[in-house]
Image: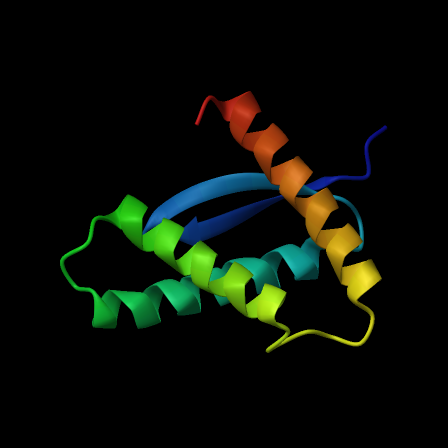
Length: 99
């Protein structure tokens, strides 16, 4: 029996059903909130870009900050591992829904 739970995330007005392993639900919610906040910031700066461009731009900005160490936590190995696991799960879920 799987211990994964399904979370509904709302990003740019669209709902995504994402499976999260037990104990990782809050990380998923926090990641979605961080992305949504970055999207809102970029939407103000670039009001004429498409939704897809806005998501890509926001994701790149968040990744660049991580790589530059601006928001690097002390235990980067754990965070990197957790993000990689979360990324694989999100991709698998999107592949399963045909998105």
